[in-house]
Image 1: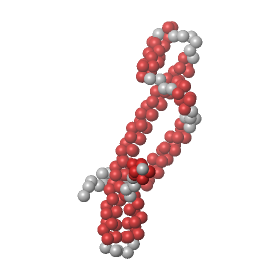
Image 2 (image 1 turned 60 degrees about the horizontal axis):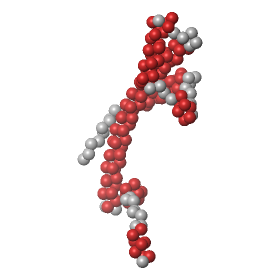
Image 3 (image 1 turned 120 degrees about the horizontal axis):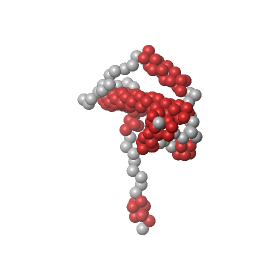
Image 4 (image 1 turned 30 degrees about the vertical axis):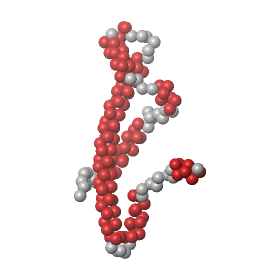
Length: 164
């Protein structure tokens, strides 16, 4: 018998509802700032790479420590708001990505458990169908379609032989 029940921890319906409510609340809280960029816009504006983040942070540091060296043409209040927002968003994204990774891992184990149990049930169904137990033959035929081997396409060499 293979490994089963790799993840036997399940959220209660109350916790599922609470998580769904929290996600809805998060979506609502972030609605005013979330923007749907087109593929062209994403390509145009891109995402600054690590080197450019270091550059922005260095400019930020210079403006904080030696503001007299900063350009008067930059709206520094907006610069700070952008910098603060991007840092807050980066932290939120990191936390959300971690949650998503952990949810995907838990789901993967539940998927595996479901599939193994379904295989066990299919084996049992095949056994019972072989004993002509009522209903099992129909169930077996219905499930068997998921294990049908694909038929290979007609070979062209056969056609070539027939043409000669």
